[in-house]
Image 1 (cartoon, rainbow, N blue to C red):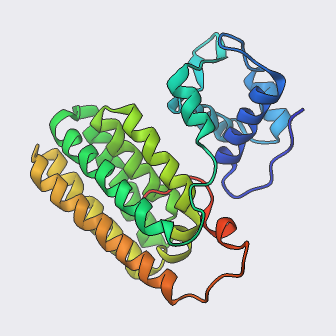
Image 2: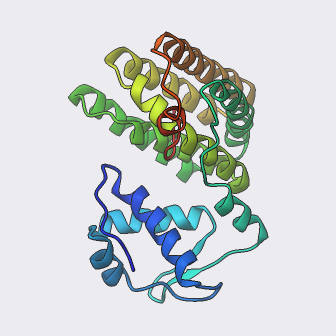
Image 3: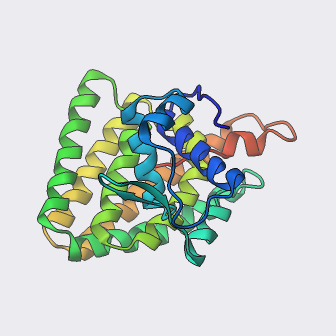
Amino acid sequence: MFRPLRTEHLYQAAAQEIKRFIAETGLKPGDRLPSEHALCQHLAVGRTSLREALRLLEMDGLIDIKVGRGDYVRRNDLESFFARASGPLLDDSSDLVDLTAVREIMEVEAARLAAENATQQQLDALADRLQRDREKVRQGRYELDDDIDFHRLLFEAAGNPVLQRFVRLIREATRPVYEAYLLGPEAVLDTLAEHTAIYEAVRGRRPEMAVEEIRSHLRTTADLIIARCRDTEEPKAGDTVEVAAGAAVGR
C-alpha cells in the first residue's frame, strides 16, 4: 500500500514512494504502474507533483512514460545499479570534501560537453531558467530546487544521462548541507552571476571557458560549505548521517 506524503519537496518524496511500491509489490519490467489518477489519490499529491515525480523516475531509468498508454517499469543492469546506490553516501562529515571533488570532475566534463553539443532548444531552456531565477531572486523566492534545475538542464545539454545519474547520487547525499548554508542573500546573488557566466560560455560554444567558469563556481561553493561546516559545532554521534543524507543538490 502507498503512504500519504507530508514533505516540503513532494515530487521527490513521491518518487521515493513509487520506488518503494515497485520494490515491495514485485513489479517487473514491462508491468504497468497504477493510473495517474490512482497514484494521486494514494499519495495525496496533485497531478503536477506526481508528473514531476514520474519524470524524475524516467530520468533515473526506472520507468517508461508512454503518452496515452500509461507508465511502465523499465530496468536493466545499469539502472538497477543506480537504484541500489540511492542510499546515503556520507559516513561522516569528512566525506563531504571527497564528494565535492568527485562532483567537480563530473560537472566540469558536463559543461565541456554542453558547450560542444547543446541544441538551440536546450540553450533556450537554460536562458529561460536564468530569467525565472532572476525574477525569483528579486522577489526573495529563490530556492535550492531552482539551483538544482539549472544544473539538471546543463547535464541534459551535455547529452550523457549516465554522467547525470552519478551526480544525482552526490546531490542526494549532500542536499541538506547545501540547503542550510547556500540560500542567504549574498550566496544567491553569487549563484545567479556564476550560473549566467556558465550559460554564456555554453551558448558561445567555448568549452574551455565553460570548464573554467563551472570549476570556479563549484570550488567557490565547496570552499564556503566546507568552511562553514567546520565552524559549526561538532554533531553528536549518530547525527552526521541525518544531516548529510537527503535528496538532489544543484549548486
